[in-house]
Amino acid sequence: MSDRPALRLRGASIGYGDVAIVRGVDLTVHRGETVAVLGSNGSGKTTLARGLLGLATVLDGEVEVLGAPVGRLRERGRIGYVPQRHTVSGAVPATVREVVGVGRLARLGLFRRLRPADRTAVADAVAAVGLGDRMNDPVASLSGGQQRRVLVARALAAEPELLIMDEPTAGVDAANQDALAAVLAGVTASGTTLVVVTHETAPLAGVLSRAVVVDHGRIGYDGPLAGSELPVGGGHHHPGEPGRPPAPGYRLDQPRVTPEGGR
Amino acid sequence: MEVLEFGFMQRALLASLMVGLVAPAVGVFLVQRRLSLLGDGLGHVALTGVAVGVLTSTAPVGAALVAAVLGAVLIELVRARGRTSGDVALAVLFYGGIAGGVVLLSLAPRGRATNLEAYLFGAITTTSAADLAVFAVITVLVLGVVWLLGQRLYAVSDDEEYARAVGLPVLALNVVLAALVASTVVLSMRVVGLLLISALMIVPSAIAQQVGRSFRQTLYLACAIGLVVSVAGTTTSYYAGTPSGGTIVLLAIALFLLVTAGVALREATARRRHRRRAEVHAAHPHEHGEGCGHPAVPHGDHVDYDHDGHLHAPHRTGAGVHYDEHGEHVAPPARQGSRP
Ligand SMILES: Nc1ncnc2c1ncn2[C@@H]1O[C@H](COP(=O)(O)OP(=O)(O)O)[C@@H](O)[C@H]1O
Ligand SMILES: [Mg+2]
Ligand SMILES: [Zn+2]
Ligand SMILES: [Zn+2]
Ligand SMILES: [Zn+2]
Ligand SMILES: [Zn+2]
Image (tube, rainbow over all chains, first blue to last red):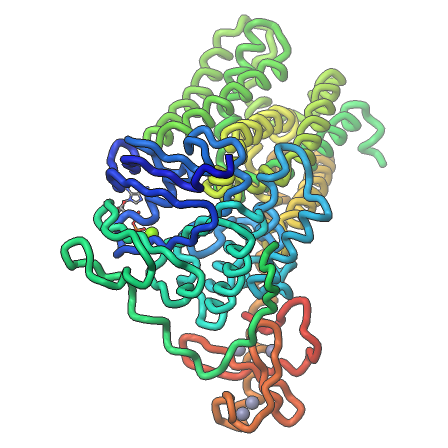
């Protein structure tokens, strides 16, 4: 089955209720490809990503993920997902370790508990996003950007074949964006397919090779990332906010990043 | 102890022990899921079950269990389908439950135990040996399921959407949790009554979450708190001649207020100490940075500046930057203390 593309959408319309937000999308992403999904606010990027995860409704056409129709995909544990939501929100305190541990659960079936190997994967994922020394801290005590990195670690801990990230760099400072790029480089080197919904391609430019620009729910551009800055779809495409926030007056120390990343 | 001399009090204390342990173990997940009032609603539904039990001369506890579990499953199915209409459907189910219970109980022939108040507010001294056996089974079952599925229940309660995306059986887990709540409701019926059950599920968790650092810790702490207030409340009610349910809940709320005040006080003290620490830097007013002349020392996720033997850390707030004294930890610590 692994010769089947990681993603195949044919005439896919995706939306909520019976309202299609993304319409008539044809898209094939092969194993190991690294794709940026670009587009202005409200163009339907998040809806597209959620459709791939079975969180938004496929209203028309076909959506195949890892070789199976999205509704019938059995081994979802092979998917990693970073939602657009910025922060972790539970009412009861939970540590970084506990939140990231959830990333391993889906691989373990219904009853098995985390084994030593799973704990190692969790620790590696947390270290990869530079929060190794915050493992046992309540997530609520972290800053917004750090919480964002916790959600990235949760996806990495799954050691996913397909990693879908919705704006993983939003609210993360420059140093940690660079660190994330290094982690993702390690993950993709081992063959993981990467789909990153993003406003700003600059931080992850070294990792992403292909760009898909969503424009009013349709694909307006699909090609090399370098060409995506060209005006497309009638010239009103604005791919992202200008650059990063200015570097602060002091440098954050770089988190420990192993070449293997979260593996 | 005088309380223990009577058989009915022994049974009462045993029942309150089980309730105190089980109710928070389930309640923590409800709080996490922001569904605190589910227990309250299922208490309403259980009343119809009680009434059916009384009318048909079957055990009210068993009938209540069936009604509450059915109600719980129904609620989850409604929640999984609809959005706004689900909210209304829940209200209809809940109020239908209590209305049905009241009306059915009024139809019971004379001579049957139709003491509505006993079911609504608890009548712990009426706990029979047969009730105790049912309660023990429920206790073992609920704690067993929480032990077995706790991590999954946490995952679904914490981030349902993520759980669904990675293929955890979200609906099944939600139904399991609702069934646990229903079982707990029935278990609590004699001790705190159907109207106050929710309090014993929620308040211990509300206390524990102010102190706990991890979900696991909060869960254990909530169970310990539940156990203590439940047994202490039952004992108090015996001596003071007050109803056990109300006494237990008042005790829990008193503890909640005490802990909330304590935590607020501790935070105020920490803020004051933090302000004092920050003032050390005010004596040398410049912004530390690359090449400011002070050696930079990496420290966790930030950099401290070595300043005459003190480590000063920039701390950016809405009001600008000030410097915290981080001198007390030379090696990277497990946790940072000065983050307000
Ligand atoms: N849960 C939802 N239900 C209905 N409409 C939604 C929902 N989420 C998003 N939308 C609508 O879908 C459109 C695209 O949103 P989204 O996919 O989040 O865009 P993007 O991620 O590109 O900013 C918006 O018009 C938004 O209002
Ligand atoms: Mg979006
Ligand atoms: Zn200083
Ligand atoms: Zn300086
Ligand atoms: Zn400070
Ligand atoms: Zn420091």
